[in-house]
Amino acid sequence: MFAMPVLMILLMVIYTALAVFVWRYYKNGNGDTYPLKIELSILAPATLVHGAIVLLPILVDRVLVMGFGYALSLIVWLMLVMYFAGSFFYNLRGLQLLLYPIATISLLFAAVFPGKYTGYSIENIPFMAHIGASLIAYSMFAIITLLAVLILWLSRDLHQRKFSSLVSFLPPLLSLEKLMFQGMWVGFILLSISVVSGTFFAEEVFGRPFEFTHKSIFGIFSWFIYGTLLLKRSMMAWRGKNAAIWTVLGFISLMLAYVGSKFVLEVILINRL
Image (cartoon, rainbow, N blue to C red; front, top):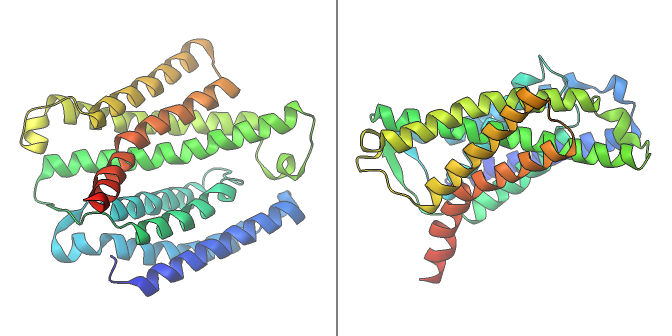
């Protein structure tokens, strides 16, 4: 992946340009006539190039690279693909306000801190199923966390009676909450597959017995948070600011379990040696 610096720089330029485009329209444009088709026509080739970069080791070398920088880029790519596909079925307007800046910063961060290059054979089906479910779940929860941030942002403006451009640009608050919990169900199912396979079938997946590590503890804790949120949503129709805050906390725990631990182990500790 990191043998293609020109493509990486090009992607960062495109995502930055899209971020500027959305922010300018959010500040000055009419939210009812947002030119989504123009945005998606630019995003489509960018995601294709991005996908070619992150999938190249799998297609050519038959290995899954799980170093910090690569994993971060893969998660960002999955988030962008989810947004692109979801835009044809849901009103996701406003998500770009956070998604594109994060995509640019994440790619820059991944390029500067690539981490340790570690490849795993894709012939190990149980391991690939575990990693696949984990990565897609992580990306899904990243998307719903951005929705939670938008909910908190919009709730603050409405509570303060600030009818800013944000109110007219974003979908209604109830629509954002409904979309957040729908995405949470998908992510929770995938995370459950990851937790169960990594806990009860550790020997088949990793080739060694299950051990309680910081990664497994944070992963199980985030699973518990999301499960509790969904249960309270089903039983008590829980919604609003508290639900959004706990959604963000759940993702922080998940981040500490995966990307956070990789950053510490592969970047900070190695650079100190």
